[in-house]
Image (tube, rainbow, N blue to C red; front, top):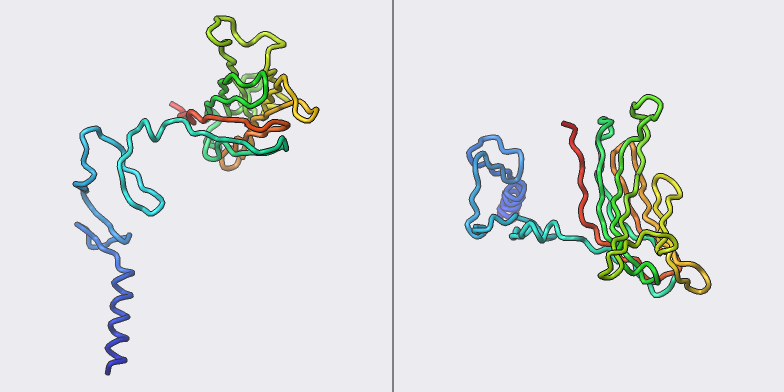
Length: 228
């Protein structure tokens, strides 16, 4: 009898653990299915902060400034060996929408002389246009827009060659920054490499440092377009 009682109790407990609870609905489709508004009193605030969940699933409040603040990517090591670090990996464009695109904005600089003043870079990913007829080519690529700013408080821009870093674009998906110093006889370089998946519309943006100790990147924003 005790064995039977224990079995029935265990069965009831398992059923309870797997139950779906519905509020204002008789057909819940999730563990908790609420048909109506929800009020959580301990999350009330006068600043209209955003509700977030941590790794344990615990809800808390966070201001928009915290969520959208720059993300630091520290591509550093104790030697000058080539090293990659992911800056952004995720959604960029809608593959079925030719006019869809995204722009990734960031600031970055390095430990090498001539490249320790921050550079502002924007990576624009979109479809190429056919110069012969103005139609979309069906090929997605990355384009880089750079602004090297100013030298200290001077109004002289950091653009004239041979001012460093020297920026080159080996192909549509790579931007290279060449510094004026070297490590172990090798010139310092850092690449921003964009890998595009035309099927999913996702991109992977990486920092690739060579012959330097640190390439510091601050991801400012990822803006995805909408076709009006």
